Image (cartoon, rainbow, N blue to C red; front, top):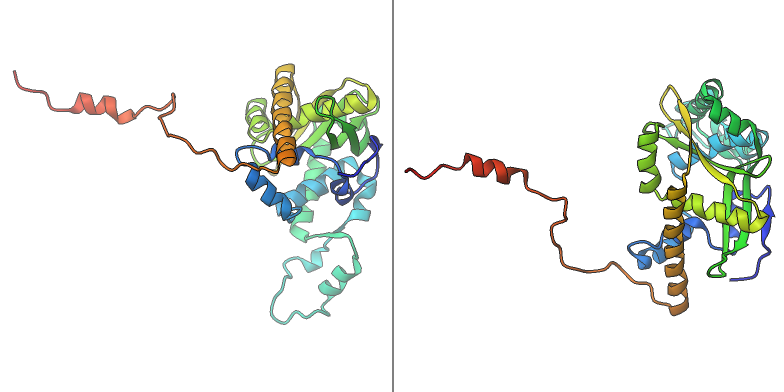
Length: 292
């Protein structure tokens, strides 16, 4: 891995961030049950952007970097709604010409653009006090940091959605098809390893700036109501997250050093502690009794 200077970088595109020769959170956390599979996936390069990924990226820009929206995205006009590759539509159609005129901008199709504009409006109108306070105090967005891990010396990188003006709050904007309530969000955090991301990014921020910060998730529901909430990562969550990303970082570095990328662990299947057959008890009760 080539050398790269540590520090803060502003204004990098996502592709430029990916190209930085340092280890990202996604690469670390892919070292789970099957490092060999993770290596094969990494060889294929960045995955194609899904509709959900595009939605999240555009909403990030609309809420955190509104001045860059027109530079990055082109919202399809209503007149082209529903016009896809239909019979009779040629390359010279108005829609095709319009798309060609957008150059390197990412085109957001009309229905998605309509949903995003509604989501932005609902967010700004209905955000609670905690959410609004974090968004209004966002001093920089999509801030990239590069640092040396204090334990392993590995070169790491992160891209932080929102950094407060005083550098004491780091926030991550998430959309969810579930609910933004605390109980549901707790499950989501540990299901998708968001706790590891929080711990790693806070460690990186401290390494680069010397500042201790807190981590907040701004969660917005994707339904027509667009309710949102701000949830903070507690000490135990960060402790679990730090253990999770460090263990996987060690596995990644070991695989690189040895050239050995293990597959799934084979083993013997035994019933888990939580398992019980709900029919056993009832079958025993329902079994015919021996006559006296």
